[in-house]
Amino acid sequence: MKIQDVRVFIIKDRTILVKVFTDEGIVGIGECSPMHPKLIAEAINSVLKPIIVGKDPFNIERLSEEVFIKTYKFRGRLVFMAFSGVEVAIWDAIGKALKLPVYKLLGGEYRKNIKVYASFMRRGQSPREVVERAEYFVSQGFKAIKIKIGKRWGFDDLPDNAIEIVKEVRKAIGYDIDLMVDCNSAYSAPRAIQIGRKLEKYMVFHFEEPVPEHDIESLRKVSQALDMPVAGGEQNCGRYEFKELIVKDAVDIVQPDIIKAGGFLECKKIAVLADSFGKICTPHNTQPTIGTIATLHFVASTPNCRYPMEYNIEPHPLRDVLLKEPITPKDGYLAVPEGYGLGVELNEEIVKEYGVEV
Image (cartoon, rainbow, N blue to C red):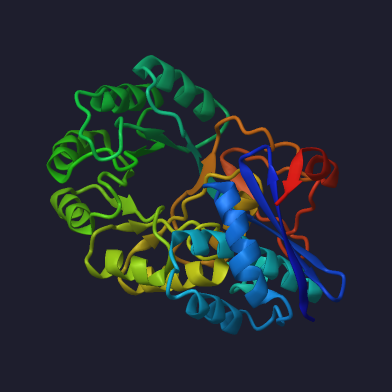
């Protein structure tokens, strides 16, 4: 089997859909992290496509290496994000060709029903607003939630209402619900440590990205100063960036994003590296359609993904329409699709109506 073509579609300005076409009529689908869609599409069309077309998709180790070697002079996060969507689509095509789910190709079933946490993406809300939302999603069966704190990236934009929000949410949902806190790089190391120490009494499950992600030394300082687990890695791409996070003991929980960090194969290597250092892998995941499906296959087949998986609960225009059979959490769990490849089908009418091929 050979790859004949790679095509990119931007849907409703926020979803980057990738299709990989083969000479056997099999079409794999994937998704890229939705940052700068036109730039990612250009990277796929002008950089990746000439490398990938004509290759055997089953030689995915060699193909991945070729992509990263041929782009080494300028390789960066844009290339990783672009290749992630293509690589997921290639695995989908392989699974369809072999008539197997992707998770069985990645190591087989380690777990089947995946516990997920309701991930709040919005910040700047009052404690009352956050509490009401938290109570609602707990009532819908979620056993874990993640809320945002902080204001702006790395500016220590204080005072903020971080402590009050966490205090009120914990009071409302009790201690039987796991509560994660995401700072999105809001603080300097001293402030993150100060705030983190105040949050520890509320039994925070993990303290995510407390400082700007590029400052590994500051992240290490925060991690070493606190008792609660520090999580990070959603901005990182490739196993070599994660190696630095892990070897320097800057995080307790690593968070590669399947559709950003390099795809399935690269993230499996990151997970093995993390496991070698006794660290948990909890993938970052913000896309509630193909990205979520890909993450489910990854978590299902990766032993050290032992904690709840991220599930974006914010409104998304394609959540219930892009896939012919959307998946939704039940009692705080998601089941891994059993069909061939990723196990889902696109609603091509939606792609046709709202998608723009780039």
